[in-house]
Image (cartoon, rainbow, N blue to C red):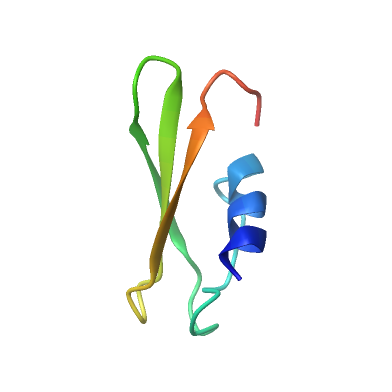
Length: 62
């Protein structure tokens, strides 16, 4: 469930993706720095609180 959401949001953090858990709300997405060359992309559902994150090289074009 989260793999498809993560794959879409890894490429386009502004994509509209429904929560893979409840399917009732769009995921909120934000990035945090994770070392010199990477970011963590956090994905959270504002309705049910489901959460996941991915680790991404920030130098790869989106």
